[in-house]
Amino acid sequence: MHIPVSKDLDLEALPIVLLAILGLCVEKIIFDRILYGPNTACLYSGVVASVGILSNAVILITVWTDQRLRNSTCWFICSLAAADIVVLTCVVPFAAIQDLAGHWPYQDDFCNTWIVFDLTFSVASLLSIFLLAIDKYLTIKVQWERRGF
Image (cartoon, rainbow, N blue to C red; front, side):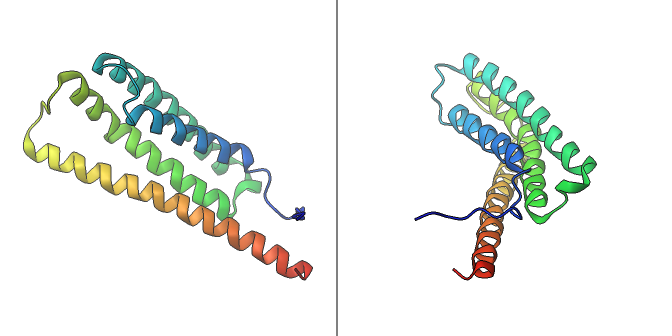
């Protein structure tokens, strides 16, 4: 079956989507403990956090400065980028320190706060991906209905 691609579909946002997917894949590799030790995990977490923060900041700046990218799809991508920046700044550094130390070196109250941040912003990131998928589905569905499929 051939799926017609309309010129109205937002193909300009493709690089932003690919950057977001790449960031998620790299984070998944790091957090699945494929790495070989706490020192290596800490080093890679720092690299991934730095690259992730920079690339997500570029996404936010690009959408903010380019008027053509101000549509629903890009706003969902910005929501995903913002959630990822918060996770990379508030969760990943403390997880790396915990891996390096082998235990939680801070007070229990901060541990609970860290867990809340982790869960809240990770779910916000997943919700952004879910809403992005619904937005793309509705965009394609509307295009198909206009063409009479």
